[in-house]
Amino acid sequence: MDRIRPNISMAVIRRLPKYYRYLGDLMEKGITRISSKEFGRIMGFTASQIRQDLNCFGGFGQQGYGYNVKELREEIGNILGLNRRYNTIIVGAGNLGQAIANYSGFAEAGFILKGMFDINPRLIGISIRAVKIMDIDEMKGFIARENINVAIICTPKEGAQDVANRLVDAGIKAIWNFAPEDLNVPDDVIVENVYLSESLMVLAYLMNQ
Amino acid sequence: MDRIRPNISMAVIRRLPKYYRYLGDLMEKGITRISSKEFGRIMGFTASQIRQDLNCFGGFGQQGYGYNVKELREEIGNILGLNRRYNTIIVGAGNLGQAIANYSGFAEAGFILKGMFDINPRLIGISIRAVKIMDIDEMKGFIARENINVAIICTPKEGAQDVANRLVDAGIKAIWNFAPEDLNVPDDVIVENVYLSESLMVLAYLMNQ
Image (cartoon, rainbow over all chains, first blue to last red; front, side, top):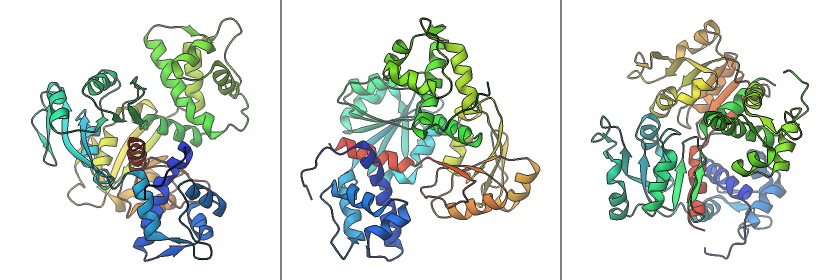
């Protein structure tokens, strides 16, 4: 399981969740093994791309047999770290924060929502799926007490950097950021951005071509 | 404004919204012009990357002057099609659909929410920001009547392809898809995907490195 892994490009990493998703679909259909050719066909990749990608991780296929769907999925899940659990908080408990709190893919990937934080007195005290919205001033103590690993920023653009600073100060090393702002954080803090409006602008662009 | 544009790579297109966002930030700070060097520094690109990207669209900078912030922003906005209006519906009015309906970046990019659709009788009839949730069986007529250009799919994975089929059948040519499913649509239909769980898995991966 814990093979030594070379430096893998982010392009390959970003394809892994797609492999994981398609392998899940195959399992649901009762398919137990698949050739790189057929796997490539359904994913829209060439067979050689598939082999190249999966070789980065040591390669799991066997000549003449193809890939064992269940094993490959488990292995990719392990590589992605989906077999671990991450204690998570959401900062910004407005519409987007509440939607994310209700988002089912969240727990599936091992992220356990432990608390939500906001500055709005009308939100503080209410619960979303049994998770309480607390005052942001309680955040630092909560992070330490509850061993929080991950914070999701769902604030508006204004305030996002300030929240990031407070999270870094509280020891958070991983941020999933929905605010349309490039956060300034130390090198050892990971930020994964989801810029919804940028995706929408790309759609607008493509509609006009 | 309507220069003839060569085929531009998607990599460049996907950077345009970031340029647009940073130019907006500069305007807010009262900065009226900027050199490619300084612009590159704040965006984390090289000056030559900036010049190369913007040259794809005819180039707007002047030797020794740099870029006019306001003009460049407007021009990029036009290229992205942000000066147009898109009549939009949301299909799937659960938590995510409701969050998207409340999402402010949405209208900013020219997308006007006209209606929401669901199959859940408990949702049908209620309104989100004065936009009514209707029965999905009314969708086709509504699309024709209200000149809908864009549909946002916020359903679970199951049902997403069926919804896409109905949208295509109703004449929709642009879909913003949040369902974790690769939609099968005709070539003339644009799909822009936002796979939240894949972004989350990448975060999990990076946390384990």
